[in-house]
Length: 184
Image (cartoon, rainbow, N blue to C red; front, side, top):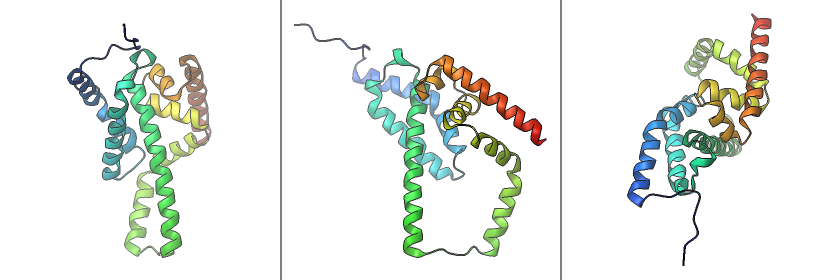
């Protein structure tokens, strides 16, 4: 009796491991950079990157390259990992505030904050402009312009068509340029 076929002829377990290792080596830097743009803490970046690849390794046998690139698939996982991280951080902060109350900042902490704010002025302006975009448009710009994904890969990560993503990118970039001219 013939066994049902799948959409992908999987290699033996060793081959699958080697295949995943090649994907890891090719993409770990991009995934880490994705998290580094969202967190200044290198330990958090490392944790989120690791968590992304653990989740990817667990689900790699079901990855179908016919549906999109490994890069787009990994960035979709990374987005879910980061969303989960943000939800957990919000819950931890809320719990800490309820349990411990608020604490005041010391003079050295205030000076450090002022220095960071001054050093990140241009970045904050861009973040403000990006925040005015819809979440899908903002994520599209981040994935293509900051993470280096192709529009096709970003479209797969966002579960939209490549054409729809290109239209979103065009409109978002046009709006960002217009706002930059108005501000400057």
